[in-house]
Image (cartoon, rainbow, N blue to C red; front, side, top):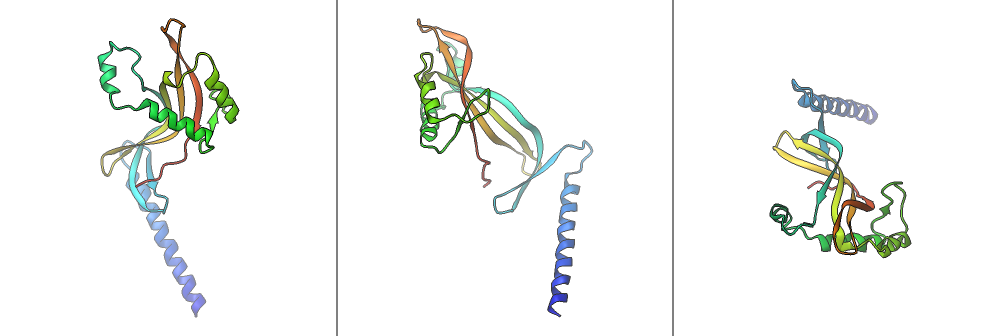
Length: 184
């Protein structure tokens, strides 16, 4: 008798689960056939339905105004705390809490490798002026919010001549792969 009740309960739960999956896919349907993603929290709670806007996009963000005459860039970056952020990244790499990767080879760097980078004559933490993000973008169709999931960052520094003149090109320091974000 108990085995029959368990089998019946399993069948009911399987049907409820199947219905739930069908409803999820139907909720994603629209005339444009946009890709739709459901974000699930770490405890398997459904938070929101989102449209995938960009899957694994790379974009760079300037974090230092290298031109004191550029008021627009100065205004945009007025709240960026470059020094604290860069120091935090390096401190975590040296403490073994983050792993630095060679940007070109995508291979892990040792702590000694990172120390060698810091000793290079053209390198200075203060010259790290850009972060390249590897991320996906989502737009929540239910609450009209935009979300980003960052997978990695690459720090890039400017190279200066001995006279203190900034060269146009930037050079990658290293890549940091990030853990998936926890949802609220």
